[in-house]
Amino acid sequence: MSSYRRSMNQWDSFCTSGKMFFRVALFCILLPLVISWEQSFVDREEAEELRKSVVYLSSYNCDLSPSVCPPENTHSYHPTSCPYVNRRDAQIEIMQMDEVSDVMCLQGVWYASDLEAIVERTSANFPYSYSFLHDTTGRYNSTRIPHPPCNEKDTKILKIIDECEFKECHYSSYRTKIFKCIEEICKVKNIMQEMSETCLGCIFQGTERGNFMECTKRAYAFNPTGLLVLSRYKILKNQHELYHPYTNVDSTGHKRSSEIIQRGYLDIEVNHIGRVICTHLTEKFGEEYVEVANTFRSYREKNFDEFDTLYKLLHNVPRTIVMGDLNASPSLSKGSIAPQFPENLEVLRDIGFQDPVSDSHKNTQADCSYCCGNFLVMKPEIGVCSKTSPSIGYIFDHVMVRGYEVVDTEEDYLKNNAVYRIFLVNTQGSAMSRHYGFTVPVIIG
Image (tube, helix red, strand yellow):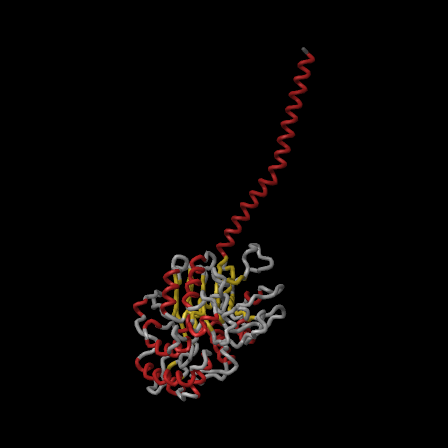
């Protein structure tokens, strides 16, 4: 009996020690998991807090101009890109699915019908918007825009231009060549300076039928400068300005902006973010400068003047964002980015603006936003890209910030917070614009 008890005591002792061993082993196994889970929870909390302090700013040139896809050339381009309204609808689909962008600065939205479609169909994601067509309260009301681009006085001049253009200048679909022909062959530059800015803009951007007289119709009601801002956050303040509001005095003594394309900016204050400038600066349409007004001698000079306006507007403002198609591309030591007016970008850099789109690729090859391999860019109308070098491209589209911390794409604690391109192709794999856009994360805390 005593032997049996000894055996039972030994078994109890073994079981006790076994349970202890099991507990220790289980503790050793679970402790790292618990710590990992706790750390993961903390990381998620930190990530969520960081996400709240990061805003995503997107810039995109929608390029919604019928002249980008003229009817006579429709057969040579992807059917989902022509007519241009197909590109617009594809762009809207992407905006509807966008769960990242907090503010979008859109350019190239030239017609009120396109602006209205974008504002209405993206309102679930972006309940706030602003443009030159919005009223002083920041609301868009289509009933406020009953008039066509060309008024009664414009129409009289337009009939003269249209007749001459059809006889003498209809050989080309190049917008600048047509205007050059009209000015030199038709000898109408002086009377064109009497035309309204919206009428000049409409006949330059073109209509789907390629007929100047279409610009006398309300269907082509025009959005001066082509700018539109979409925002998830409330727009607290808003105003808009032209860069060249008074470049000419007409025969009645009234000052007017006799620009083929008006350039300007939207100046807004966005809740949770701050001051944002959405803009579109002068484009280099070719080697030869073509313009109705005689204010400037080159596209470079005009583009610089617009940068200088931004400098004067913002040099004493410690914290602001400038985003849009600046039509200036940096000189980079690596990659296939071609420069264009790079010195003009320095106007803002010199007062402390960072350019994350250009700078975030210091250790890699930068992505272009205006890429020569894009088949819409490869159109004969576009002279800045060589057909033999499709790998070359430009960074025309920027999000420049001053007084904000830029999320570093190399050492960033949220690795997915990087500058990246957007609006590359639609669901059919077709380009939606001559431009690609960029989304830039910025810390606002």
